Length: 288
Image 1 (cartoon, rainbow, N blue to C red):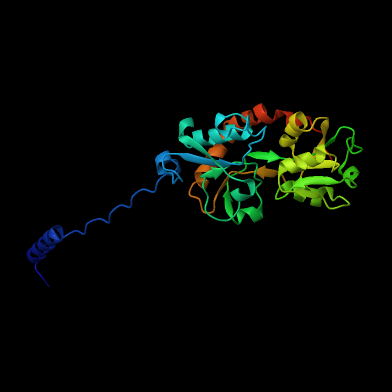
Image 2: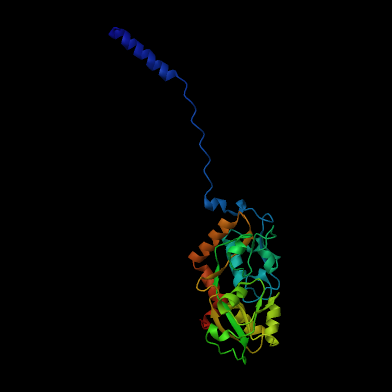
């Protein structure tokens, strides 16, 4: 057995050894992950053209979405929405540039010449296979337009349109709405361009034209004299149809654009823009 004095001495030596032992450096602290606000800062965004937000839309740009066929003037529902989103992303008006993009090209597969496109493009699962969509910025219904003297002008239900010869633009959800909701007796007349379907109504080649409600107001007000909106209806049997901003598949902007739209909904700005430019839509009767 060791004597007490030896035990004390050994203890002291052990303590000294421990005190002098090398200490491993602490593991380096990982850099903090960027917050969503940092990731969406203007200088962090990956853009088609550095320093500029490039927005696509079709030509001509029709009312009430745009005014005077000039997307850059901030007037019309979609021009106003585009600039509101740009503002949420930190861009001034002079930092936004517009690119002419055909409607069906916007959501076709492949590289894009825009950061996002705004052109009344409905969010659908098929289209989402080729492009990314933002959260919806507008919930829309379809409408039926006829000439005022048409025998279908007084239709109060979808059933009363069964025997109508209906015109619609190719590649639109209006075409699906005609086939799946109205289900006319005859196949609809399908046109490559909206203006062709409008001319068909004007020339009485069709009985009725089906298209989105806000555009219908412009058609009846400025494009087809003596025409009227018969009514509006849900194109998907109760599930709201929404327009979304279109981005290239895998776009790094999507989360930031979604955040911008959500902010515009939350602060009431999106509702104000809709009220200003699309308020007339409330005047069309519901067709069931």
